[in-house]
Length: 261
Image 1 (cartoon, rainbow, N blue to C red):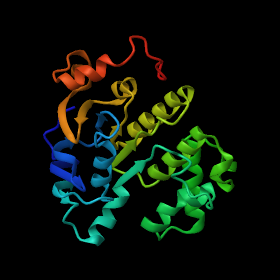
Image 2: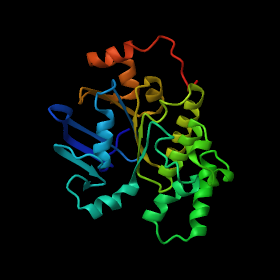
Image 3: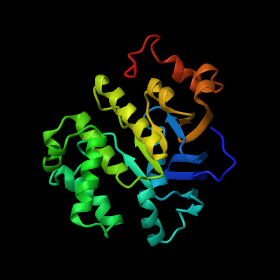
């Protein structure tokens, strides 16, 4: 996907350190509105660190993160808070990402209370009910607690919470890796459907190359904190250029179990 317009997200020369170790090394990339960019690499390569820096949950040692033309790294706290509604994340562990003391309705409504305080209780309840239905859960789920649901259902709740504000960018950090293979395809299809309806962009982080190939317009490969290759999904999987990318693809079984088939 290419565009002459300003990219939604522009990351430049991003560096981050943990003690003496470089977690990110001069990472730079762009994501256009409505585009899905996959990020793949081995465990410890820097995928989740990159997500945290983009979201403002961790400060980099160098570099910039521009979102809709706004420098998030140097922005005032009030500006950063205002942009958080447009930058949402779906975490790897769906149960751990939900407050066990909050009902499903309260968990999904919390972003509305923060960013749309003008809504009254009835309007919030209507929005929450509609979102629950959209992610495949019935209205009775609203009054229940996270521990009463399966992993796949909890991930649907997490997606509902992230999507309730109609974000411009959704970061999926290993969002299906903890789910049964039989459920992964359902969650991926839900994310893709929501993206089509809302027009949001996605940064899709995963070690599952089959899933990344299915959902992504472009794919970035990260190794030891450094992006070593970026290409369209079709090009990267058909003709990878970097030895590390070739090794990643070679490590996939010839007939892998594909949750999307």
